[in-house]
Amino acid sequence: MLSFFVTCVAKAVLPLLGVEQPEVHTRPAQAAGLAPAPVSRARQREEDEPLRTAERQRQEARRRQEAEAARLREEKQRLLEQQEAQRRRRQEDAERRRQDELRKMLQVAQEKQKEQVRQWRSLQEKSLKQRSNFWCPVCQETVSTVAKFHHHLMEVHQLGDDHEDLVWFGGRFRCVRSCGKTWKSHRVLCWENEEPLLPTQIHPQKCRTCSTECFAYELLCPDCGKKVPDECLCEEEEDDETEDDEDDEEDDDQEFRELQEKSLRTGKDFWCPLCRQTFATVGGLQRHLTGPTHNVEESHSLSKYFGKFRCYPGCGGCGRTWQSALVWCLDNDEPLLPTQVYAQKCVGCQTECFAYEVTELICSNCRDFKSDCTCNGRANRSDDDEAKPHKESLCARCKYLGEPCWKQAFRDHHSGADLSSDDDSYV
Image (cartoon, rainbow, N blue to C red):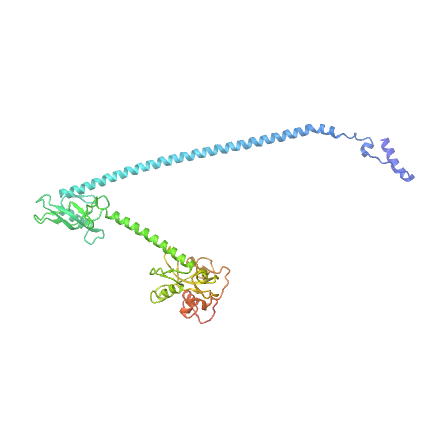
């Protein structure tokens, strides 16, 4: 306390006497003797080393715990995946066994049905040979005589001559119980059954010798004259011919589509889908369609499409490009393209051109295609909805009608509307 008091008095009196106070480079607490001397950095590091070691040990223990927790989570996830895979395999095995059982049951049922059909077929053949115990394929009943079986078909099932499933066959007859006479006929009226059953004969024929009513013991195909249904292959040949005809039609349509696309690209050899003729120029096809040969303006309905044009550079054109929402076409069946009827002239070189790309119009209200539009809005293809005037001097249909062709489209869309104005802004 005494040293602290002396220091304070010296600090207060020495400035008044004009004596400079010596600088003290120690901290106030150290100068007063209240704090220990500073410790060196090496000693401080030695003292802090246990703390840093303990902190490193805690961090290492924390990392080991996190790694162990992650390993446990991965192990748990792997076990769950294995259990899920086992559960799926059990389900697949159960489903496979169930499918196998169903397949076996179906096979057994099909075999039973085939066996039953074979029995019915044998009953049919036996009854036709022995002329007794005739089996009805409609109700699976057995009738003893020809007359009763004919009465059963006509009265119970109403298989008269006007029935829609009756077909004429040929047949070989044999009078079994009486004279044994054999004959052949081309007029055996039958009701067609499903394979492999024989067609059911409706009307018997009488023997010329003993007048005994008989059914044909063997039916013949009216086309090839072979036994029905074992030897006749007419239906299979017809199916093959039908498939070949369909393939040929598809090939022809694809070839015609390629001709259309090639003509629109090159600007020559245009193909008419109505009569399959080829024309060298745009004007030739246009005159052919609008002339007396087809007269599409009156005999066909024309539809508007959006088209992209390019003046044919290979046919003396300038290569200029433009677009139009008034491309008048005939609607062809797929896969053919819509047939363009009227061409448009290039504003630069006055060359008549068809659009090289034709697409369906888009409604300006709902932005759907015209075929899908339900708002009854005006159909155009201007994405920015910017109306542009239609140049009548360059449009072939405007010249043909003697008025702007957009008025015809407007008239078709709004029947009874007033078209007296001369506004040409409809595109």
